[in-house]
Image (cartoon, rainbow, N blue to C red; front, top):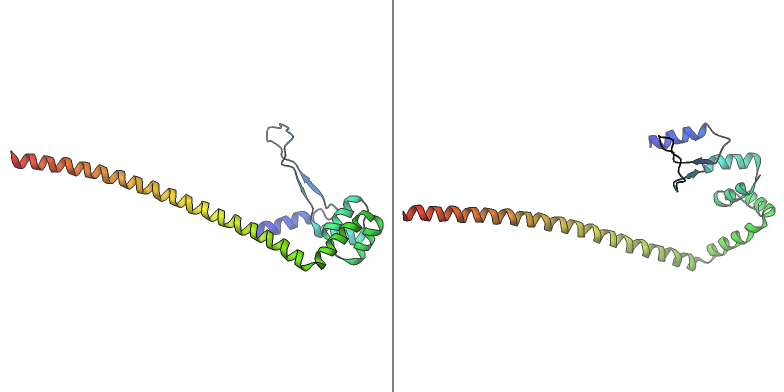
Length: 162
């Protein structure tokens, strides 16, 4: 929780900047084109900017589509960028078709359940393998002890007979 608080305070220093791009850099100064580049968009800062300045660019349009559910902004977005209208129509029809939505979520839940079961089986298999290894170690120790006992018994028998 403290980390989230400090991250929020960090973003508060950049109230006019809502897109933060991070790149991985080595401590030696070596520059490589890595796949681990990150873009953070604090939606609350973007929405504050949206409320004050409106949609000023295509990036703003996409962020409005993804992060804003206020009707006046949606209407303005569709007026200024008409290619968002079919996207909203698809979302609207999906929401109206409750059966389709339930089926979609049911399929996702089935996949999650299947993955959870697979994960649990893998975990149990790991535990079983570990237990088998411990059992084999114990058997080896028992066999070594039996060998020692047999050798001592043979020595006792030899001493009794002498």
